[in-house]
Image (cartoon, rainbow, N blue to C red; front, side):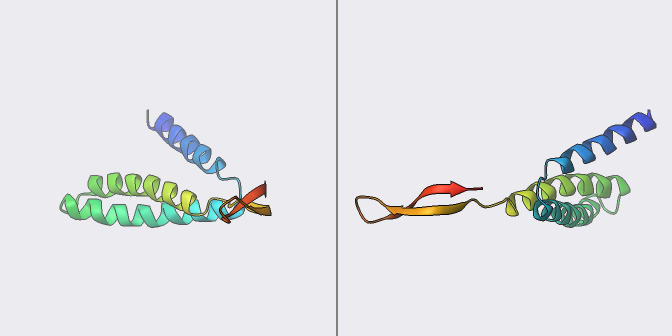
Length: 98
């Protein structure tokens, strides 16, 4: 049972990191996950009165949340190749490149 759980956890971690398709996004996701895991473990331990189970649960939840936030914060930006103006004089992007 423990081997199956460990394998499933490793596969979930590998699958979640494979969705990060740029080096900057991988760094942001990894850093966000690490910071979230540390913060979640501290908060989980404090809430449960120093329990190891609370620290583990808080660390896992914090790592997931931190990875999601870190990934969103470092998402690649789309650049505009050609700007144009509408009928009111507002600038907008006519052609984007990725």
